[in-house]
Length: 395
Image (cartoon, rainbow, N blue to C red; front, side):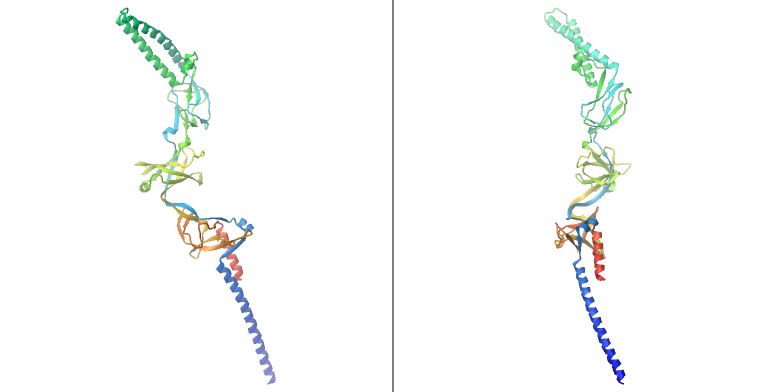
């Protein structure tokens, strides 16, 4: 009986010790759980400079962006008629010299080639002959004008000399006009210098786009020898489909890119809207002027454009700045607790607005100010780091 009593007493003591150990363990785990819970409430992640560099974290404040209805259109870069010139041969002849190459810059009135022909010599000879004859006829006319007053010459003789003088003057003026049109220097000709060739001059300043001749080529009147373009007033000709025509207005903002450089955006503005649809395409032509001069853009290039209607400015952040979790949206804001050695980023819930071409509109709040430094690149990595820390603490 005594032995049974001792066994019961030992069992009771063991149970008491075991309960004490469990309570201690539970108490310890409770502290650990409380610490983890406090960390989750903070929703913060701390990073050193080296970590920020490794994750390529970038921050910036919300920016005002254009938000509007967008209309897609295709087109080409074009020049107005007064900014491109086709240089045709004004007379036939053989190409004596070419003074430029394709792509060369030229000034208005600059000589870019010479054409030679024997007929150029003949017309200069004719001019000099007519000019000398005109001096003699004028002297005869002036002399007989005085004699007719005294009835020394007959009226008929005076009329004949008058007619000869006037006809010669007409022919002299016409020949002079021909020489000027051909580009022959009249002053040098009257000094005795006869040219064997005529110059081809650029009628505008710009760049030589096309050269259609070679040395010694024989050209005929009307042949196009050169094309010169002035890219200063290059613009876009866009085709807008019929359904979008009612929304197009003058001065609307346009962005466009080239087929070979889709990520490079250029700015333009609508300056003219067509008044009729193109029959074959059921589309209207819209003209947009470039905001800046771009030397890399050339006439004929194909463009993809976006026309913006109902423009307004709105604060926005890049789409990359947002994290989606359990149906809610979050951003990371650099905390004022950050130091030079360590940056602190707070995870903040946010209501998103309208998504537009890679940016998301936002509303300012108690936590998100206009000057807040928001993580716009690397938010995904920050969120992963935060989840990693929380997971480690929970274990």
